[in-house]
Image (cartoon, rainbow, N blue to C red):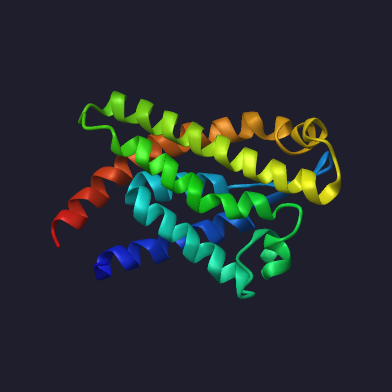
Length: 184
């Protein structure tokens, strides 16, 4: 791995940590609204599947050792093994899948790139929802249906908005990063 790539992975892990602190508790669910998902998708779009996943592994590792990088300045293994841990643990896989779908885009057309970004991020969101909801259901004893109502349904619209923002923002960042990485 090149030094530039390591730095970019660290920067995107740090951005994810910052986005975790932009957190709004919800009265209807134990899962807060955060901007972490936006950062996960940006890491995948900007860095690609492999480096995007690595950036999220770095993020989770920082939290696992106790650094306060998760929502509400929390950290530690108890968060990852808790009711919202499945969402966090899904980030590397979501970034990898999102990045893989985006990498299929060989077209330099901006509109096609934004659409590919949106589709990749939507598939990544599905991964986050499934893994997060399953862990929540197992740990709380709720049925999958109850867990979907509590942990997915209220977040669909905010997450679609995040995907729309991320897929558009990613276009500029993809161009800048591609240029930067190609220069050595």
